[in-house]
Length: 256
Image (cartoon, rainbow, N blue to C red):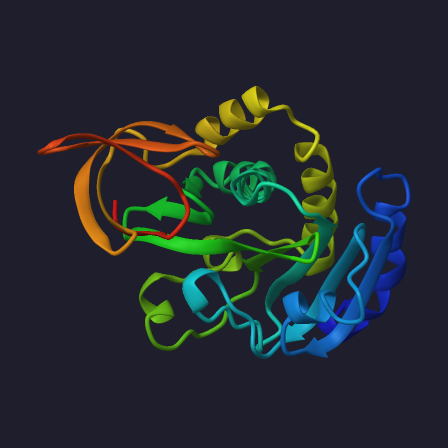
């Protein structure tokens, strides 16, 4: 089945996934949009809505970075929920992605997981490659959780050319429809985890605990070893000047 034929299956197939779920009750499938995040917030966002697009021309990630899905080779998805703790929503989305993707990479003998706080990477002998990312935006009592995943091979430009990779680049063959179905189900399950289960599962998939990292937080550059990590409360960083607790707000992990 070619990609265009698969698109025609998306509405019915995704509706059948959300029908039995508690957290979602509506799916909007778009052939093309500038941003699923922006579309999801138009005309009064409805919690329980899932927005997916075959092509996204002006997507974005954290800190205003570009997340392009213009090539129509990946997942561009936004989940609309009642407003909540941003850090917890980010952790839920990251864990939901990891629960789906880690087994796929493990089946190919590859190590993968969450780069705190919100990215998903695969680690290979040739380096670390970004596969997926999460964006949380909240306003007017509603949270929109954006999830982007690189599925099929494509060429990236700019800084993405150095770090981005896709599932198919590593021999993983899965349709965008099947991956969307798994991600929606996974997120619906994870958002019901209590804080202890969420933190424990996040640590199971974490890539940076115990590593020496360089990060920017609130405009300051810090360097040290990650002693412990909690997805909601932050990480404990052992620096030359002592221990510092770093939350996930306004943080950019430069090297790890």
